[in-house]
Structure formats: structure tokens, C-alpha cells
Image (cartoon, rainbow, N blue to C red; front, side, top):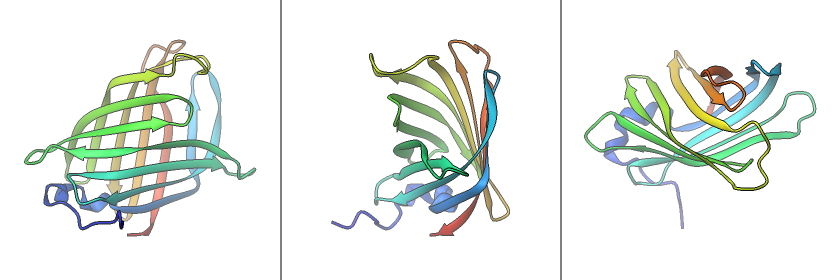
Length: 167
């Protein structure tokens, strides 16, 4: 079965996002409780013919080339609206549902549900997330903010600038 299908008409406002985007040493991570770091990342949005895009994101250490983070899920749109939801499963045992809006070439999302495995997840616990995707010229920017059990205020965690590698 071929999973790449023509884009559902409801996704026309998200068409600019479709494809594979790569950040070579342009990912920057920080948080009040950790040392700042750089990373590489590749994210991909692909059509399955339904009013959603498949999403895969994977990052790796910029020097050691070892995997760091992986998340998979779906970016859904409510047909006839600009309301979107990003449903994700993360490799460290977290799941998130982030809801928001798409306006022109920008998506803003806030978590409405954050869950984690009952055992095997280390502290601190992620409590809330906020995420933005923004197309600036030919580059895609993503910013992720979060609050945890040891930093209760929403704080910037990730900022990445990607270049499109393929449609």
C-alpha cells in the first residue's frame, strides 16, 4: 500500500508544510535547568489522503551523531476551519495533544493533554507545551516552550530553523 496520497482538500492551508525539512547544526536547545546545546533535526509532513498530515521528527547530536529525540504523530485540521491539532508520541514515554490555529504561514499550538508512562519516565515531568511553526521565506522555524514540575512557567526549550530537502 502506498501511504503517500494526494492531499485532502481540507489541507490546502497547510500545503506549505508538506515535505521533509532538515536543520544542520541550527537547532538550539535550552531550559532554565540545563546547559544550552546544539543539535541537528529532520522533520517530515506527508499526506495520507485524509484531513491530516503524517508527522515524524527526529534529532541527533550535532557532533556525536547519536540519536536524541524522536516524535511521531499527526497534524489534523478541522475541515472548513483554521483549527488544527498535533497528536504526538515521544520516544521517552510522553504523549501530547496540542491544539491551535493555522493563519497564513504560521501554526500556533498549546497542549490540551500531556500524558506519560506510569513507570520508566525520569523527572522532571512535562506539564504543558506550546509550539509554533512559521514559514519565513523558504525556511521553516519551529519554537517549542514547556513547563515542568521543576520550572512551572512556560519557558523556551527548542528553537530550530529548517531548510526543505524534498517535497
